[in-house]
Image (tube, one colour):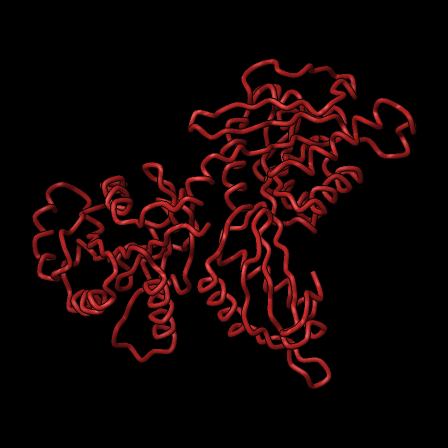
Length: 447
């Protein structure tokens, strides 16, 4: 189900990216005082007053410039406006109304899309009188905000929600899904301790003896935000040669593998003192093969001697050891002390949204066109790969079909480049992506 799209547009350096980053909750778009820093469309999912929508940040609109870069930025912004359900037109309250603002407003009126006039950098109440001149643009009441000081952002989001199209049945059904969360890893890395911390109760038995948890234990609960989650505590997974053929542990491990198969998100627990072991890599491979979203959780962080760079260095080492899932977030915590455990559920919900994200076909093919413009498809034996278009076939994980002239011309390196471009263009942290190549007029030929 594609979420409604809300485009942020305006001339350069009016604070569009600052607003975008505030609402996204993290620094996604680069923010500088230099006009033209944001060039491509950048996306982030937002939830406000029970409605979910996708926010699109765009480069500054310069309606006159013949500069190649500025013309491309204008083209990107125009695409965003064409796709958008609501357009937020940003102006700069410090500089006041300009001729460039009037030119952009004249263009926006022609789109016949729902418009909100946003005057940014209204940093204190004394600047409120400056809003009146913006009525001259003829596109409605100006909304004064300060992205830097976080003033008026809630009022603006509420106005955006009022203009969104009514939620469709598929969007309402998504709200009812219970996130299936499997906690997996080697024996004695703290899986049950973490589950108990998240649940704030001793739901599962905890012991220093490896193998205390014998079965996959389901515990449904609702978090403070009303999100329903079923957390699955699993048995530790040892190397196959260490397990007797008919032992109880063999069946415990099989149940752990089954828990991976039925989960949406897997928490792969590591022991901070051990780093990534061979067995951790094998468990990560099971998660990847099952096509599940994943978060790597480094437990027992309280037992590690640290300096300023310890966490950054270990994150780099972990992602290097797990190169095949370098898209995973890495969290550092202590289930024993509760340190940083509160961050887990927020990251789970973020990764789950990425796991079930659906990209509209038009948006997807614009990203594909951008990728091919930046790096041309490969040529082999005088024949060039042609990618006609792409469409998303499924979610959980996001699965894309590429219609091409000859799938054998797709080099692995270019396929990886396309994946990285999609990850850069859209939010796919924590989720695998599946690409299917289909020769035009033929059946699926490579997945």
